[in-house]
Structures are given as structure tokens and as C-alpha cells.
Amino acid sequence: MHRNPKSLAWILLTGTAVWLSGCATLSEEECKTADWGRLGYKDGAAGHPESRLAEHAEACAKTGIRPLADIWRAGWDRGVRAYCVPSVGWNEGLAGRSYQGVCRGRGEEAFLPAYRAGADIHRLQSRLDSNTSEIKRLERELRQAQTDKERHRLRERLRDLDWEQSRLRRELGHLRSIAPRY
Image (cartoon, rainbow, N blue to C red; front, side, top):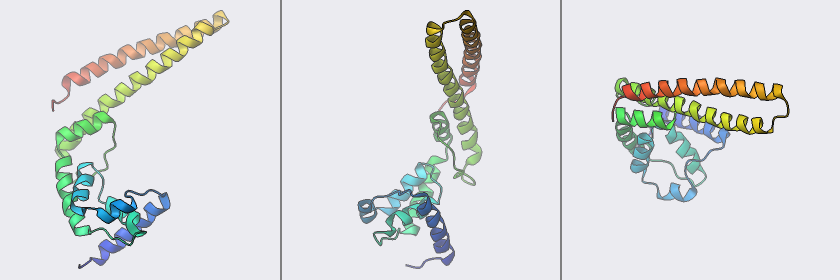
């Protein structure tokens, strides 16, 4: 199989970085039985960057197995096309997953607004959830407070959080009402 020297150098460089970070994307058995086209598609459809191939190469190096880069890339290209659509962007944002820029030149202009809308809703929901936890903690503290000064401080903080929760709920409701439907 013909290998591009630039691609091989890139794989080795990226693979070294992955090795230093200590993560393995595939087990030894997975390396031996990999369907590289299917794996590439799965990686692309999950929004993994092309550098994922180097991570697989590093994971499989100990077995002596090299990924079939051309086959993996063809699958990855198909997977990225499936990933770079607004409905996936929306769901990725809502789930709070990071976007790694794989849609540049592949429909990013449609993907990103949907991703950002979902991410905004996720961010607000996370803040609401965090505030709810803080309110419960402060309410427990209030029940155990020993002094009027301490109770007063806790009640003020609870009022502030309650006001914040109301504001966040309104903002979340507004974002949901204007969000695209997928």
C-alpha cells in the first residue's frame, strides 16, 4: 500500500502526543479485528477529529497492526458528513459535548447555529441544576444555624438564588421558544 510521507509523519507526531497522554482508543483485540472503514465512520459520526486515526495507530502499535488509513479516512469522511447537520449539532449542544471543529468546510454554517442554540440551553439548565443543589445545601445549613446573624445571611443568599433561578427559568423558556425544531 502506498503511504504519503507527510501523512505518516503527521500520524507519528500525533501518535507520540497521544502516547504521552496515556490514552488508548482501542484494545489489542479491537486492533486485530478492526473494520477500519466502519471505525472511521463511527469516529466521524461521533465528531472526532481526523487526529483520531493517530490515536488508533498508537493504540495498535503494540500489536504491530497499522490502521488502514485510506479506508479509515473514507469512512471518517462519510461519518463527518452525517455528523455535520443541524439536528446533530443541536443534540450535541444540548448534551453539553464539545465541538472539535470537524465541520469546517463541511456544512459548519448550518451546524454551528444549531450547536450553539443547544449549548446555550444546556448551559442554562446546568446553572439551574447547580443553583438547585446550592439552595438545598443552604437550606440544610439554615436548619442547623445557631445565630440570628447566620440565619439572616443564609436567608439573603437563598433569596438571591431564588431570584437567579427565576431569571434563569425565564431565559431558558425564551431560548426554548425560539430554538429551532429538529
